[in-house]
Image (cartoon, rainbow, N blue to C red):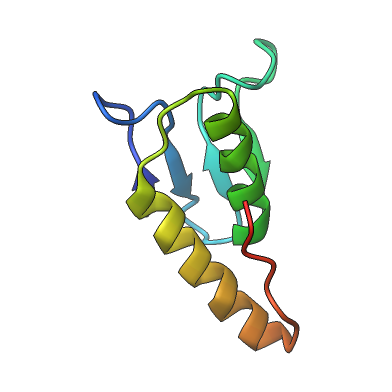
Length: 87
């Protein structure tokens, strides 16, 4: 599932892997050339990463942030812990 794709209003391509275990920011502008993808296993981690993109002046679709924030809430409910949604 894709959260954001490269385009006129997006500097990021973020998706969940086929097995559902990993979120990927592919060809990430914040990562090194020898490891061009950022990966995390949870929505909170990706929200934090996308906040760094916003801080760097990159375009991140608001819809992607909203969907990941929703997923972070769902994940927190299943873990029984509060989600940290600030970015």
